[in-house]
Structure formats: C-alpha cells, structure tokens
Image (cartoon, rainbow, N blue to C red; front, side, top):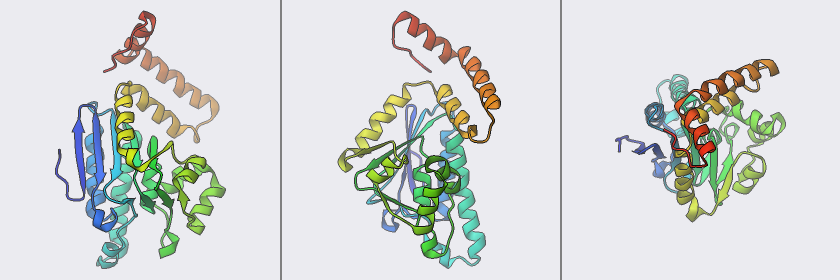
Amino acid sequence: MTDYETLTFEHTGAIARITLNRPDAANGMNATMTRELAAAAKQCDTDATKVVVLTGSGRFFCAGGDLKSFASAADRGSHIKGVADDLHRAISTFARMNAVLITAVNGTAAGAGFSIAVTGDLVLAAESASFTMAYTRVGLSPDGSASYYLPRLIGITKTKELMLTNRTLSAQEASAWGLVTEVVADAELADRAAKLADQMAATPAGSNGGIKQLLLGTFMNGLEEQMEFESRLIAERAVSSDGVEGVDAFLAKRKPAFQ
C-alpha cells in the first residue's frame, strides 16, 4: 500500500489497484489528485505490473474537475492548465504502458471522469453508472483525451452530440455505443473487475503492450506502414521469452506460463 492523499494505491502480485478517493467531493479532480494520479500511473509502468484496475470510492466514479478549487485559484487559467497537464501525463502513461488498464466505473462519470473512464483498455460499468461530458454546462471545453478517444470510438457526429448537448448516457446506452466493454450489476462490479484482472494477469504483458501501441497508431498510419509495424512486432514477440513459451506450450498442449 502506498500512501496518497486523494487516492488509494495497492499493488498485489502483477495487479495494481487505484481508487479515486474523494467521495465527499464526488471524486472531483483537483491539483493534488491529478498530480497523484500521474505518480501512481508512473508506478504502474514497470515490468512488475501487468494489470491496473482504476475505480472510484462512494457513489461516483468521478464527477470531473473540482470546480471549487478552480474558482479559488489565484490564477485560474494557469491552475487549470497544470491540473489538465498532470491528468494528461497520467493518461499518456496508462496508454503506453504494457499493463492492461481496466476502468471499473462504479457510478457517475462526468467531464474528465467520463474522459478517463473510456481510456480503459477494458471498461466495466455498473448498471447504475452514467456518462456525461458536462463541460459546456459550465462554459468549459473537454480535456482528459476526450477529443482524441471519443471520435475514434464513436465517430465525430456522436462525439459532437455528447460534447455540445451534454447528453447523459446510461451504462447500457454507453455499451450500445461502444464505449463500455461490459455492464454488470452494481454489487458484482468489484468482483468482476478482480476476476478480469486475474485473467489478464495470466497473459503476456509484452503482447498486450504491443497491441496497445499498434492500435494507438492505426488511424494515423497508412496500410503499408501499419503492416510493417505489425510484421516487426510479431517477429519481436516470436523470439521473446513469452513468445517462445506460448508456442512451446501450444505444441505440447499445455497451459503457458507467461512471465
């Protein structure tokens, strides 16, 4: 257990668990939380971590930025820029680490909470969870990678609808739109996240990280460039310890023991 002020961080075996822990403030992101989230993400970017589970405490996953802290800042623009930069540093680390990020959305995900929820490689949502952008409601604009991920996940038209109208999606609607991997009963969310984390911890981290890198570049690369990345990566994986073990285990008809 590592001590943080606004979140809890646990590392057990190959699995790290991060819980946004400001329940009295709807897990709103202030400067301390985003700074600590970036630090926690950095702790996960090691060979020892194969899975990260990110969730919230209390009724909210995260209600977005802490507007009270923004309003009280002496230099509001500079303050919010710093908060966003730290959040973006965390998201960049989560996106580029080998570990699989599982977001377990336990309640309302609004603003930056929505943004970070859908950055998960696998997104679990409780039945009572809801998703809304909510930025323009207070005269702000999206951050937390929303303008990158949402168009890729659901297209420009639906992204504009969410960002301009602040439509709220239920967990089932978010799943139908392709934003959520799986919807589970509220009481089963933690157990389902734990089981999925155990499942992913048994898989090869290098292969998982490679998939994440391939998919990050797929909308920016041409066909031949993307295929070249594929061929180089699969060749690299073939001579890795996990690649050798995986093939040997398949041929021997036994379960592989990945590092």
